Image (cartoon, rainbow, N blue to C red; front, side, top):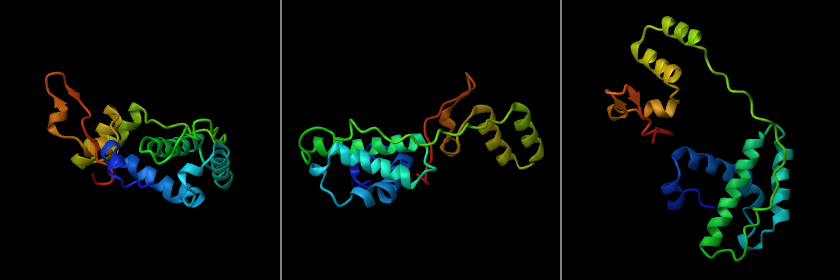
Length: 166
């Protein structure tokens, strides 16, 4: 799989490309990079995912499902380009259990107010307010432009994000 291929870079966000590249380079390629796509079977793919789960017992269930999804996408693309005849061998793969995702912590309004009261730098206060009150992520804050703000409604629309400097 070439994560740098134009197809992936055109259709997916920078963060998705970064994640796919990491999964491919560090987890999938060492286990399946030397085998031809046309020769892969469902049992081999399932065994590979379970091996990854055994070698990374701290891995979350969501990550193991994402690995399955990445593999499925590789085979879907290969089938679509005529590089692999037949069906997608990942379709019937059951990933290992993995750990449940951790609870996400959200600051209370009082905690946000305390943070804002403790900081004097206006830019930093603005970033904290956008993250805390509006719920914008770091990439969404970095991607803000004046066009995102509707003065009539008082709404901020997320129209872009900056990930890995892009």
